[in-house]
Length: 204
Image 1: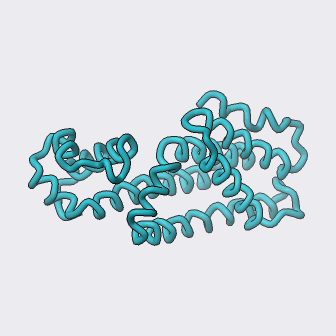
Image 2: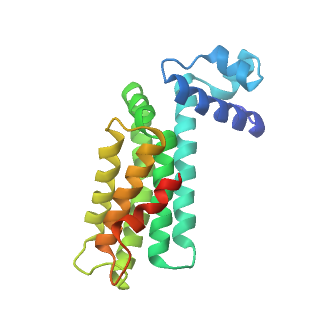
């Protein structure tokens, strides 16, 4: 971003995110974005620099928001398993609202953006794996589990439903149910059923 008006930048990012999700990368029209942002086209280009810079800023702002949410949840004091459930809820909502086809299209059109996102992803992956390791060490999760493997199982659930024909709240529900079953199998000394762990996903 080249402009120093933070309010204008935030407004453009918000409108661009909505436009990109609705119309896709190729369907994102700068004239429409300028109109929806309430800006002249030349002012818009002073803010975004280029279409690729705009898309990268949108993707990274959303990803950083998700990473911040995960760190906040991890840092909260409270029941360990409940915290894991909250993390699962946030992941399901995030994937439903922004991941899916949009990210695939962005990465196909702009491979450089994918590399930048992957670096951000590695940081969040490390934090989550550390949190899973803590659960194993402190006896909340089964001792025979490996945190890296458990994280890969979570990823597999996400990828399966992202690549499925399910969309919207139905996709979120299935991801949440998958996370619930994984938590149920991983947790130590729990009387909750798999469906109870995943049940809150039906509220999304």
